Image 1 (cartoon, rainbow over the protein chains, first blue to last red):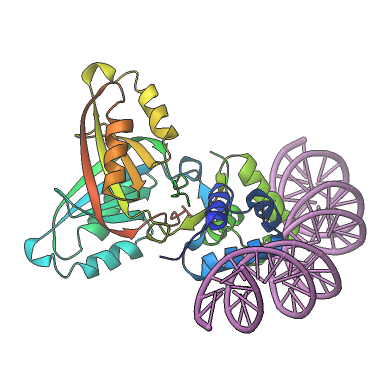
Image 2: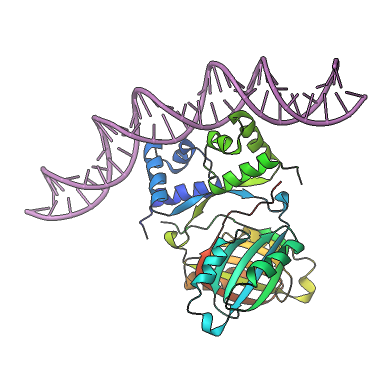
Length: 156
Length: 156
DNA sequence: TCTTAAAAGGTGATTTATGCCAAATCTTGA
DNA sequence: TCAAGATTTGGCATAAATCACCTTTTAAGA
C-alpha cells in the first residue's frame, strides 16, 4: 500500500466527486499549484490507486431497469479451483460486481439487465451453464436506493 | 426515458471506459465532429442520464480492506414508512450501495470500511440504532472479484 | 419539390495540460 | 546542529482542448 498523504486523499476525494474536474480546479481545492497536483494524479494512476474514471450512468434512464443480486453456490469439490468461475463472472458485462462471500452462498454477483426476460436468458444461458454450480438464488432489487457512491476514504 | 441513438450510446460507452477522455477523442470514436459530440455530452448530463463522473479507486490500495453485504430486516409495522431508513442509508458514506430487495431481507446494503473493528463500530453505532430494524445479517466479502464495472448498455 | 426545424460541422478566443527548470523543503548522517 | 543530497513544489512556455457562435447540411412534413 503506497503512502498517501493529505494531498493525495484530497485529490482522490475531488476525483470521486467529479472525475472531469480540471487539474486547475483540483489543485485549488487541495491547495497545491497545478504542476505538483497533476504529477500526483499521474502517480496515483500509475500505482494503481486510481483504476480509471467512469461516467456514473442512471440505470433506469438507459433502460436497465432490473438489478439482481445472485447468490451462487459452488459444489463441494469445485471450491478450490473456482478461478475459472471467477474469470467467467469477470468476463460477463451484465455482472457489475462480484464477491466471494462468507456464509451461506459462495459468490455474490450484482447483475444489471433490461428486464426479467433478459435476466431469465442470462440466468439459463450464461450462469447455469457454468461448471461446478450447485445452487443459485436470485434476489431482485425492488428499488435502487443508492449505487456507486464515493468511498469514504481514511484520512491521513 | 429520453431517446438515445447510437451516437449517445457510443458516447456513454466511451465515458464509462474513460471518463477523462477528451471530447475530441470521444468524437473520433463515435464518428462525430467535436462540436455536436460535446453538445450531446452536455445534454446527457442535463437530462440526468449521466449522473456524474467518478474516479474508480482500488479499495485495498486506500486501506479499505473490508466489504460487507448487510441484509437489514425491517419490523412489520415499519414497512410503509421506510423512507427515513432509506434516507439514513443514503447519508452514510460507508454505504456505497443500497437496495430494497425481494425475498428474505428488506434492505441490502454494501458497506465498505477499513477493517472488522471499524465495521463493528459502524454496525453498533450507526445501523443498529436505526428505528424499526428487526434483524441484521452481515455477509463478509472474502475476496473482491469485480466492482463498479461499466454497464452493458442496450444497443440502439 | 419546397419549407422549416433540427442536428452537424467549422472557427477562433480562452482555458487547460504538460514538460522543463529553478527554488524550496525535507531527510539523513556525521 | 549542520550540511549534502534527494525529493517536491512552483513558475513558465507551448501545444492541445474547450466552448460559444455561426454556417452548412440533413431530415421531415406539407
